[in-house]
Length: 301
Image (tube, rainbow, N blue to C red; front, side):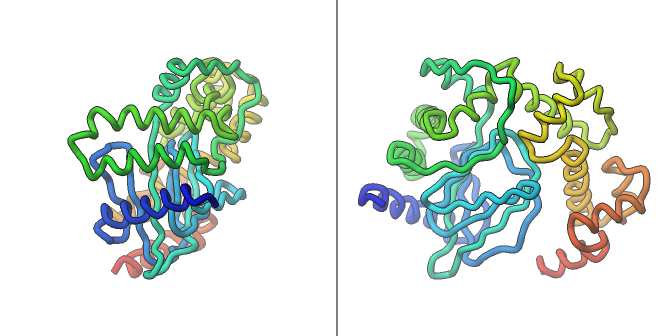
């Protein structure tokens, strides 16, 4: 590790620790798409939908599980999710003396397309979509841009003018990185990744409603076998498995937030059979709905 990279990481560690108020959790910032993270101990696996984002760890280590694939990253790497994906995430290295400190920058396909147009990046559409999550090494130019955008939190008056420019630079650096082509394909209209993104967005918006695979294939302008192949390449799961994860995660949140019983929640998230819901819930979370919610409430207390 170069001296320059080490100094930039140490600066970011101090910035994030200070702007998090030295309190654990997720911390929104005055830059709407920028979030800071702090934890002083390793965490249990947590289910959630990973936003479309670029993620950096500056102290500690994190692991993200997409289906059966593990993505572990440290201060030497960054993680990118090019589409929204149901995952299991876990902080695996953190302590009171050296807390986990990280940040996430959300982005939109429109921002990627704008950066590509302004920088003259013109990738050709590819028939074969690529996995919607990847890890790349952090280089000095990218780390420098991240450092500068985070330092804007010390000068809020500069944010409206400078933050959009620095975010463009960050996205440009990612596009120029090892897996930049995967991110670029997200914005190429007509390409496989672009069409799968639209199917993912549709399922996320209508996960409660049952769908037929031929309807999704028609929406993507693909044959059914091609849709299955491309969808699994991007998400590591089938459309039905993707929908199931969204339904079960939503059900868990409803039971925690509104104290609803399992049968009522099952119908709310699209299940016709409460018994099937309970079986699939236990398969995903390891406990029945009642036992799982009781355990989570005990942990929160």
